[in-house]
Every structure is written in structure tokens, then in C-alpha cells.
View 1 (tube, helix red, strand yellow):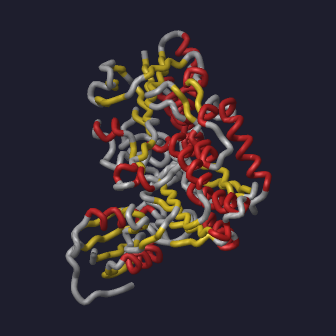
View 2 (spheres, one colour):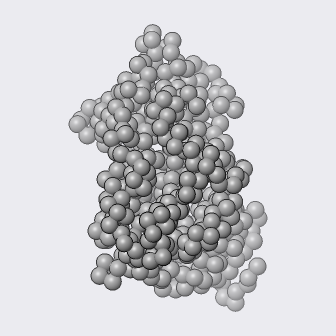
View 3 (cartoon, chains in turn blue, yellow):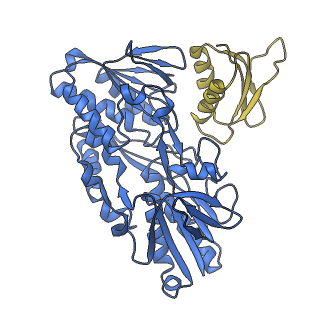
Length: 384
Length: 83
């Protein structure tokens, strides 16, 4: 029997499992192949919805469903936290001591936020990377009566690169609607020399920042928070005073891949850009946030990587070469981008072709809303 | 290309070739964070944006660009940590 083990029941892990269940239906039913997903909680969370909790349009309970309900019935689900990967023995050990053997391993272990790496982060800064934090930001916005809003990034890479810009646009629009804009300043601090990593997106976003009166500060890598003076300090030596501070927390890869010696202390797995194999290992793959690829850490990335991994594993199981096109990731990512005032745009790009976002309009904003609502029936099941 | 009068002793070399902008800059920032004042860090980048971004960042952050060298198929930027 060939055992395919997938660590992580997020977008990438779930979709890979479901695609494998389709591709290997016969061998799974004849018990020649098994596909198992290991997930810490057994709950699948739609993380892009967190930002909308902060903006008052979403509720946490609508962003979670049992992982089992999203998986093909041929896929086994094990609820538990992986603590060690033993490459020599080809086993994964869970915290409760269970040991799961594998022939093919998919690391869809995601990223984790580490706000504790910045002293006073939890006390002073808001973010939208958990449902609880997003709700806390919502309450802070409700209580806000005007002042300096500082939106910044306290570590790269981080999940969903457009999110902090989107939040800047959405908060600015909300302050305007609530009549607080005249009494407020909105500052957007970018860690690099422009508003966004991808130049074409930066060219689109910068005039919108100007038009909305959001002050752009470049090369601001936020390093420390001084809670007494209520200022953030950058590595570059600048200070920004805040009344409401929204910071993207530092991110790292999963502990299990660091502890098992597969990834450096940052936790990002050394991954081949095209095959998605980890460190040249023929039977170990990484997808989604877990990789060290220089592309967006976003559900969309995992969504387009999963078919590549499924094709390569299915080919290996069946003893054939992977399809030259389907088994080769080209860096495809597609994501919606909120601009505020009910408008949005779309970013579609790959390794070789940067995005050319269309002029922001209502259609792309509605597209994002519809996508968010229909996610459960589309992406994890491989229907789009 | 910038020439220097003295040959710097490179403390650490970061090979960020194959990484897209802002990857090489972020790698340099990480090395600066981890390093000591006086360290000389060389960043190799095949992303053409690095030649513009890295010197701008170095100036703003108060470090010193020792040189920007065009190598075969990539650029090497050498930076001294000043503070």
C-alpha cells in the first residue's frame, strides 16, 4: 500500500487531498493507496474573512466548517498536531504519541503569527490575522473618535500581501462615512521603497492613496513599540505617533518543520519553484504559506499549487512521468483587492507575468464578496 | 559601478539570486538586524530592482553602501552596518 500523508487542512491540504481522491479513486477503493489529512483542530477556517470581521461585515462562526465536511469520503482525517517528521523512518509523530507512516508527504502546514516577537504588540497593536484580533480591532474602530491611525508591517513575509493596504483603504472610507475623517490622519507604512511589493500594483495603489489623503511612508520596517509615548519605531530610525495602531504581526512557518530539521528558524521550507518538492526530496512537497517561494502567502497560491502536487504524486503512484504542464507550477496567483467605497480590482499573475490590475470598480468588489460566500462549495472541492 | 579605495573584508555574503524584489532587500535587512556594527554584508541579486532599492534603503537606514558591482548575470551590493 502507498500512503499519502498531508499535514494541514487548510486550502492547500484539503484541495490536494480531494484532487488525489479523484485521480486515484480506483487504487484508493482497492486499498492500494490511502490519502490522509492531519489537521490540528479538525476545523477549516476561511482566513480571508477575518479582515471583514474587522470591518464589521462578517462573523467568526460563518468562517469555519468541519474539515470532514469538505473532504472527499475516500480521504481519512486525523485530528491531531504533528510534532515530529522522521524522514529516515518515513513517519510523522503526533503530540499524543500516534505515529503515522507515509510514502508521500505533503507539507501544507501554513504560517503562524508571532506577535510576541515584538514587545507590547498585543497590548498596543491591532491586527486581523485571527478572528479574535479582528473583532478587537472592530471594537477599537467603534470606539475611535478621531486621531492618528498608523497601519504598518512588522515583518516580511506575511499572509495576504494586499491586506494591509486594503485595510488602510477600508478604514479611511469608514472614517469618512462616519464623519471622522477631518479629525483623523491615516498613515500607511511600507517596509519597502513603494506601496506594494509588485511594481504594477504599487503604480495602481499609490495614486489612490494620494487621492484618499492616506500618507505613504516607505522603507518603514517596524521594530519596536513604545507604549508610554504611543509611538512605533522603525529599523530605519523613524518614529510614528499613533492613536490607533494596526500592525501586521511577524510570521513564521510551522514549528514541526523547524523542529524536524526541514526548515531554517524562519520556518519557510526550501521549495522548488516548479516541482514544489522540498529540498530536492522526491516524495516530500510543500504548498501554500509553508514554502519559501518568493510569491504571495495566500490561499490563492495554495489553490493553484495543489493540482501540481496532486498530479506529481498521482503520477508517482501510477509509475508514470508527471504531465509536463499540469505537474509544473508556474507561479499562478489570482486575488481580489479591495479599494474601499465598494470598489475593488483583481490581481492575476505568475512567475513571469506581473499583474495588470483593471481600473477599480464595483464588479471586482462584488466578485470578492461572492467568492467569499461560495468558497465552501468551490475551492476546497476542486470545482474552480 | 562604484569603486572603493580599500578592499572591504566581507563579513557575510547573502546569495539572493533567483529571489524577486523585495526578497534581496528583505534578506539584507535580516542580515543587518542580526549583525554587529562594522559588519560588511554582500548581497547578490539577479533582480534588477535591487540596484535601485537597496542603495535607497541603505541611505535611509543610515548604513553605508561600499559598492555596487556588476557581476556576470547578477549584481553584488556591499553594505557596511553603521549603527
